[in-house]
Image (cartoon, rainbow, N blue to C red; front, top):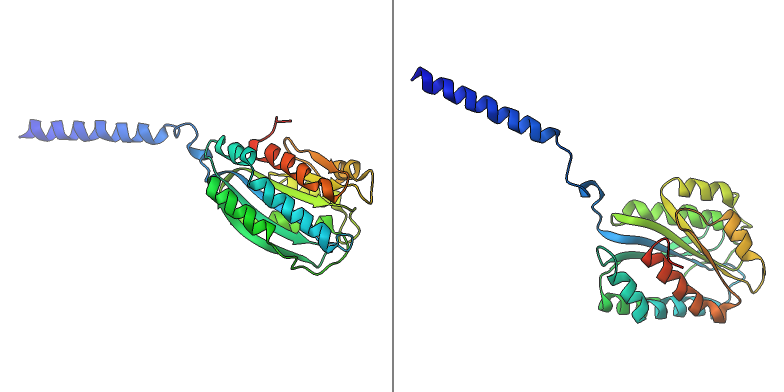
Length: 238
């Protein structure tokens, strides 16, 4: 009987050692990096005084049609998780930013088509004002607190003007980048022919960031398609 109790003590001691050893082992590779989506993307749409109703409609039509293309659908399907999350912000001056579309999951062709239709029909709901790229970045960055867990976080900001309202944009850009968010730009050059250079130097930043220019709003649709393909596929794609 004493021998039996001794055996049980030794067995428990060995079991304890095994449990302790297992607790010290690292988690399986990738466990800490599990995410719900490949990309969380905020589309920040310029609604300032310089953007008339026709130009706003061209922006929304361009974005909507882009999501409905086979190219964008294929780019989403190439991701490790085959799904992204998208939110839309309308913005103008430092007092005017709003969520036009809350975080929406895109997990396949049907989702992409539905999102495209919603964006194409989206109305301009924000008061016109000056151009506060800094406030647009601050507001857009705040949305990631409620976003699905994402491998990459990107703000896609479209604009036809320079920052003329709110705080200076470059320091704000730096604070946003410090949160692990990449900022890309789509510049409409109808009023500022060198706007892409300005946005590259003061607004865009982060891993694999880029700026795509469109000569005017008629060229916006083609530019946003190229931009979305690069953002969805990830850094290193040209």
